[in-house]
Figure: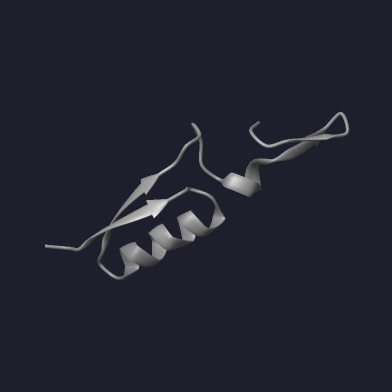
Length: 54
């Protein structure tokens, strides 16, 4: 039985952590506050202000 691991956040670091856990035979469960993945990969600049969630 694989060890279970909790990952908080599905941004850049969270996704990399999930990949590493899977490669090591662990069973990761990711908890993400928003409706989508990506974290900082998903921000845009709109009308001179930062909009984090597209």
